[in-house]
Image 1 (tube, rainbow over the protein chains, first blue to last red):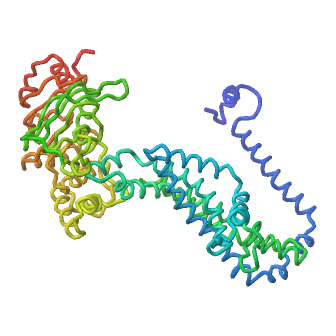
Image 2: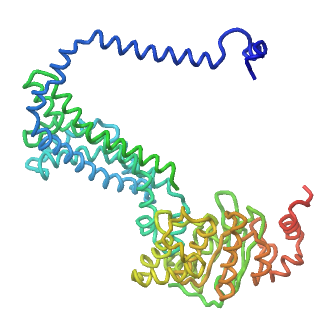
Length: 280
Length: 255
């Protein structure tokens, strides 16, 4: 269209006056870079680096957390997360199957469950299990005490979310799969177990891995139950250490420790999602 | 089990099927004798697929009786899972299980339904895969196979259950034209071996050459039912003639 020799016609194509779209894009891009450089310059000039280093990146304060950080806090965080995840997974799958049951009471029960536990804050449920149940049923012991309370409290909430994920997965398996299985003489439940559920699980692996990340972070709510040195998890360890050393470094250390787990998991989720869009 | 005196492989009496207010089958009576190959033809929406799906009760008939191998499938107390074992079905969209290899697809129902041991199920699976010409694809997943190969695995999967009757629901309609022949060849071989077959199809050449009988359906009723050469070669009814003209000579009909 516009060549160097025929400049008048190029100007006409632009609709007269102003920059060409190409030049306008270049200007906009230039402005965006200028803003980024400006912000970085402003931060570098105004921030008090020695103070930052002293309060957020204090190596001594970090070192004091060291063996416990991994041997107790991270270990407990992982235990809380996985135990709640297992309960959420099994209960969620059961609820999803109930949601799709041909018996109305099951459908209703599952729906009510999901609506309640999806609508309540996880902290409230945790306290209800941790404090409310022991008050109501005197002498009742949870298996593993705090571990049991956390697994159930967080698991109940996770189940509500996972139930919806499972249901989406089960409904995404084409109807023809069930029909083919039934036409081979499989009963409905046999067809679900051998044909439909395995395919649904593959479909929901990415969202379920996301749920694992969410649970990993929600395990910080455990500190509300008043945990001991033996059952401490990352956030509580961070805040205790921060109080002791009167500085913010332990928060940063605890935060980085979460990221050690969550960032690779996030990477796995992206890989799985990419494979699913490519495959099949 | 409820047995009815019968010589036919399939007997259908006064079959009705409605979806809501839409009546798709308006009283079908017909039967398929053991060893017979019957092709059902007709325009889309004529109810031919619904009829086929009623034969193994993938669709629950609104009224009427379906009797397969002397067992009334429409009886309320029938063990439908047991009855379906005797009826193989091949779908337009293949419906292979995508999370299993071809071999596993053919083995799973043998193991879980017929309770055959692993070794026996594998032997029978390989026999049937060889029979339909995809024995060398036993380890492949459905996504790695062409449509024609997938459909042949699906046929092997049904055959491995030793069915007395095979239902084919437009088995070649989802295939690329050059792959249709592979599947039809397998079906012709089955017919020659004496398998009882009920085939919904648009392949007129197959119907003419292989079928003992051709049934023409339109508007939820059987319009014409007779030997293949008669129904396709010299149809009696005007509706059959119009349909065949459109199918056999699609570029020259009046709109």
